[in-house]
Length: 107
Length: 126
Image (tube, rainbow over all chains, first blue to last red; front, side):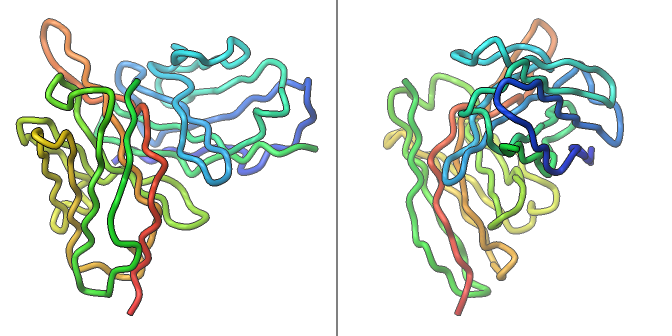
C-alpha cells in the first residue's frame, strides 16, 4: 500500500498570498497517477487536479499541480477567500489511497 | 450533469450489516466508468472502500475486502454497498462517486473520483 503524507498539517495564509501544499508518497507513484481534491466544511470533496497537473473542468487557473515519483505539490498562485478549505491528495497508480489532508486557514 | 445521492439508515448496531444505496441521475451507469464508495470518519481523512462496474466486476480495499460487497442495479441506475460485522470504527460519512476508468491501447486503469455525492453519516452504536 502506498502511504501519502501531506504537509504541513495546517497552513495559515492571507488572501492574495501563494500557497504550496506537499504530498509525499512512500513509494513512487506510477505514471504520475495523482489527484488533488478540495473539501469545504459539510461538503463532499471536489476534484481539482488529476494526472498530477491537469485541471478538472471549471477549476480556476490559479490552481496548479506538479511533481513526479514520490513528491508532488499543489500550488494556489493567489489565494481567494473561497480557497480556504482542506486539501487531499490521492494516488491511483497502485490501488487507491488518500493523504491525511492539509487545512488551509485564513491568517 | 451527473449527480449522485446516497441513502440508507443513519444508525446501525454493532455486529450488524451496513447497507447504503447510491442513486445516479443524469448519466447511465451502463455507459462505462466504475462507481465507488469512499468513507470519512468524523474529523479524519478519506478511505476508499471499493468500486464496481455495471457488469458486476468489483475492486475492494484489501483492508476491508473480507467485509465488503458492492452491487449494481442497472434497471434503477443505482449501486449499493454492504459492510458486514460493523463496529464503532466504521462510523463515518459515506460518499459515493463516479470512479473514472481510462483505457488506452494496452490496458485500463481506475483513476480519480468525480463527481461525489453529498455523503451520508452512518453511526454504529447500540
